[in-house]
Figure 1 (cartoon, rainbow, N blue to C red):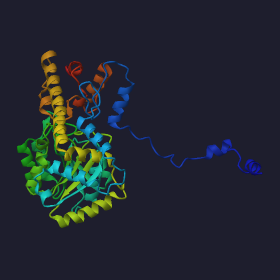
Figure 2: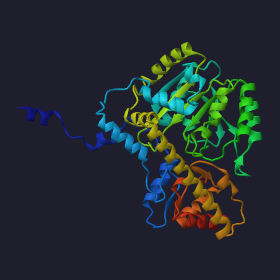
Figure 3: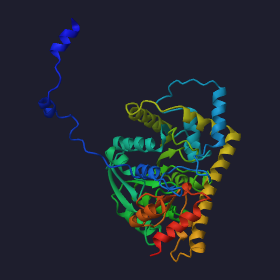
Figure 4: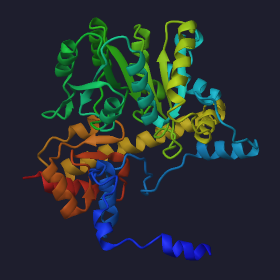
Length: 424
C-alpha cells in the first residue's frame, strides 16, 4: 500500500522543472586559493626528483622530514602512564599550561605574574590567540578601533583583524633597497598614526621578512608608542625558534612590559615545540592589578564561549608536562637551539654558495642578517616563476624562502637556482 502511494505521489523531476531550479548558493563565487597551500599543491604535482618546497612554514630536519621533538615524545609517554581522562578543560584552558606559558613569555621573575595581574587564556594556536585578541579589542578597547600592522606582515593578520571589526592600516617596515628594516619610515608612520592606535608587533623572527629590530631600535619603537599613547599587540609565534634562546627572543615583549606598556600577547607553540597540528597557544593581557585581571578573565570567557567553547587538551598537556618537568624542559631548550642553529647554518651555507661557488655579484648579506624560519630573498614575482618552472623550486610570490625546507643535500642546488634566475 505504502509503495503504491509513493509511486503516485512523488513523480520524477521533469527536464523543465530541473531547468527552473536555482540553488540557494548559486551566487557564491569561487574563492582564491590560499597562497601557501597553493604552492604546496603545485609542488606535490611536480615529478622532478630535484623539486623543493620552500613555501610551507614548518620545520624539517636535515633529511627533509617533519621533526617530532624528543621532549614531546617523552611527555606523551609520561601522559599515557598517568592514565589521564578526556574531560573538558575550562573555557580559558588547562591551568598548568597557561601558568607555564605565561612564565615562558614574560619571565619567571616577571612582576605581572608575581602580582597576579596577567589575564591569560589558552587558544587555538597563534591564529586563535590573534582572533580572541582582536575580538577583545573590538569589544573593550576604549579608543577608536584602529590597528596598524607592518608592511609586509603575515597574510593572515589582515583578515583576522578585519573580520573582528577592526579598521586596519599598514606602517612602513621592510626596505627593499637593503632587504632590511626601514626604521626611520617605521618611526615616522607610528608618529603619524592617530593617538591610541593599536600597533601589531612581531616579537621576534618577523614573518615574512626575517627582519627584526635591534635592541636599540626596539627602545626607539617603545618610546614612540608611549609618546603617542598607542597600544602594543605582540604576536610571538617563534620564541626560542629565532635565535635558539627563549630569553633573547622575548626581549621586546619584556622590555615593553618593564617600561609600563599594558601589552596584549598572542603566543604559539606550533613552531618551538613542533606542535603544528595540536593547535596550542595562548592570549594574554597585562592588567593593572588582580581585580582588573579578574574582570578581564570574565570577559575573555564571554568571548571564547560562543566561539569554540573550550580549547583542546592534549597539546596543552604536552606543553605543560614539558615546561613543568625540569629535565624535559632542559631537553626541550636544547632541541629548540638545535632547530634554530640548523636554520642559521643553512643561511650561512646558502650565502657562501651564492658568493663563493657561483660568484654572484649581488649582495646576499641579508640572508645571514635576517633571522628565524623565513628569508625575504628579494626575488621578484617573475624570478619566483622562473625558479619554479626551470628549477622546480617552489616559493611564495613575494620571494619568501622557508629556510627550514633547505637541507645539506640541496642547499647548493638552491644557490645555483637562485643565482641563475637573478644574475641578469
